[in-house]
Image 1 (tube, one colour):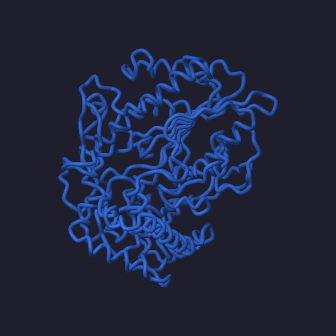
Image 2: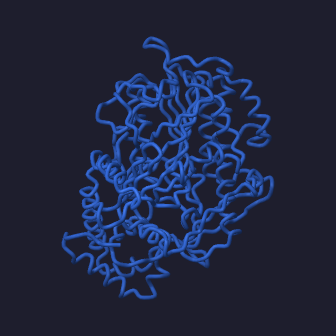
Length: 543
C-alpha cells in the first residue's frame, strides 16, 4: 500500500485529477496501425450494484475513485451481467459468449480448462499479460452444497440453503484492511505495476479480481451456521450516509412471484426483519463497496506514480450486483436491478471524458472490446459487440466493427436458489423476464422508467408487449429447449454424484447447507429426491 494507504483519499483524488494526462484535453482516437497500442488494466470485483456508480445511488456512500473514473472517463448507465452468479457471469466475460452457448449452468459448470480467452489472444498478439486475484470462470469449483442445490432445484421440496443474513463490525476507526486477501492481491498488482510494467517495452494487460463486496461466509458451526455476513470496520462505515439509505419495500409472501418465494425461502429471508436490520445490512454492504473503491484507487495511483496512466485504459466492472434486502432477498441469482445491473466504467487515452452512456450493454462486450483495443481481428461468432465506438463518443446508433449493436441485452440464470431457468431481455425502458418453458411460470414485465424499483409486474396488463418481447427473446435463444437441457443436465449430474457416494449418500446429503431443515424429516426429502429421479422426461414441474 502506498504511504498513507487509502487514508486522506480526498487529497489523493485531487492530486490524481490534477495529474490526469487528458484533463481538459479533447480525447484523441486510438492510434492507427503503426502507433503503440495502449495497455489495459481491468479491475473486476464481485457483487457491486451498478446503480451505485451514478446518481442517486452514489449519494449513499463515498466512492472517490469510481467518481474519479466518471470525471475523466465514461460510465455506462445500463450495463448488465449475462448471468447473476459468479462463475457463469465470468465465463461470459472471458469468452464473449452467452450462457446457453458456453453451457455455464451454475457455479460448478463454467468454461472448460484451456478455453481461449481474450487475454490469451492478447498475449498471442504481443501483449504482456498478468492476472491476480479472483478468476472463477472455469468448471469444478465451489462447494458440494452449491452444486447439489443447483442440481436438485426441480425436486419437490423447499429447504433453507442459507443462514439468516447478518452484519458484523470489526476493528476500530484505524482498521482499513478488512478484506486482507483482496488487499494482498491489490498489493501484488501495485508492485507489479511499479516494478515490472514500468520496464516493459510492449503493451500490457493486467487483470485484478476482487472478492469484495461479496458477503463473507460465517463459521461452519454454531448459532449463525450458513449465514452470509456483511462485514466491515468503523473506518469504512463512516463513509456511508445512513440517512440516505433507502429502505426497500418489504412485500408480503403472498404477493411475490412464485420464483421469488422459492428464492426468499432458500435464502432464509421469509422471516421478519426490522427496518434497522435492513438498514444495517445495506449500510455495511455500502461500506464494503467503499473498501472496494479504495483498492481500485491503489491501482490508479500506481499507474499515476509510474507515469503509465497516460498510456493505459482502465476498466472497472463486477460479475453481478447484490440485492441487499431488496425484493425480500439478499445475494444475487435474480434479474432485479440490484442483482443484474453491474458497474462499467472506462477511462484512458481515446476515451471521452465525463460521458454517460445510456445504451444497454453487457459483460460479453468485454471480449470484443479488449480485442478492439489491441487491434486484433474480432471473431464473428461472439455474442458481444465492441464498446469502442460508444467510448469514442460516436452516435448511439453507431456501427461497431462487427456490425450494428442490438438494442437489447440478454441475461439468463440456471443455478441454485432459484427453481426455474430464467431469461431477462432488457430493451429501452422494458425489462421482460421469462421462465422455464414460457408457459408453466408467469412471466414478468417491468417499465423501468415508471417503476425503477420493479414493484409492479405489468405482464398481464400489456399482453401485446409481452408477446413482442417474447418473440425477440425466442429469436435470440430457444429458451424452452435450453431450460429442458438444463433439467436433463441437473438430473444426470445428480445421479452421477449420488452413485459416486455409494452407501454414504444419505449421510452426505443430510449434512449439506440445508441440514437444519433436512434433519427434521430426512426420509421425506429422500423420498422426494427418489420420486424426482424416477420421473421420465415428461411435462414440466409447475410452481
